[in-house]
Amino acid sequence: MAYGKDYSLKISQKGLYALEAIMTLGHHYGSGTVKIREIAMENDLPEKFLELILLEMKNARIVESVRGAKGGYQLRRAPSEIYLSEVIRLVDGPLAPFGDADQLRSLIASDEDHRALYEVFLKVRDSAAKILESTSVADLISRGRGKGPRSKKRKDAALLAIVDKAAASGSKTK
Image 1 (tube, rainbow, N blue to C red):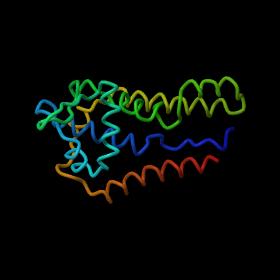
Image 2 (cartoon, rainbow, N blue to C red):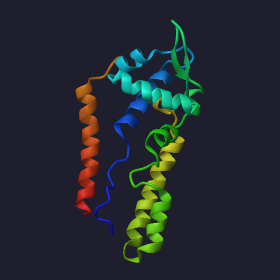
Image 3 (cartoon, rainbow, N blue to C red):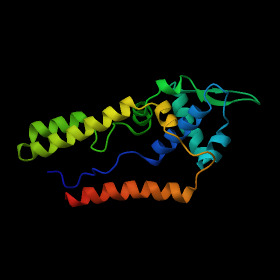
Image 4 (cartoon, one colour):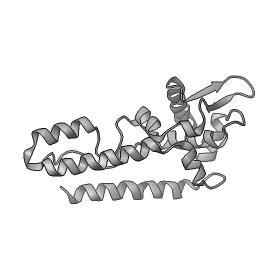
C-alpha cells in the first residue's frame, strides 16, 4: 500500500475562494455586475488572488466581466446551471478526497493485497463526485448563507477543522 500518499481533503484555499466568489455572484444573479472589491470584502478574500481566480473562471466561460464604471463580474449562466464539480475541477483538478478514479482503478487492478480497500476508496470517490456533480450554486444559495461578511477567524477555524479531521483520518490508516 502507498503509505506515503496523501489522502486528505483535496480542495485548496483557491478552490474555496472560487466557490465563495461563485456563491456571491449567484446571490447577485440577475441584478447586474459585482466588482471584485465587493466580492473580496463580502467574503474577506484577498482581492489580487480573487482577481486571478475570476480571470480563470472567465476563461472557462463560467463568469463574464463588464468594463466601465458599472463594470464587474457576473455569472454567464443561471446559478442552477453551474455545478460545484465544474468549479472544483477547474481550480483543483480531479474531484473527491481520494483523487482520480482512473488511478484508483489502476491500483485495484495491480495491487491484489489491497484491492478491497481501493474499491472502497473508489466508492467514496464516486459518491463524493456524484454529490458535487449534482449540487448547483443555486442549491447552496437556497440552503441559506448568512448576510454580510463572515468572521475570517470563524471561517478559518471551520476550514482547519475539516482539514484536521481529514488529516487525522488519514494518519489512522497509515
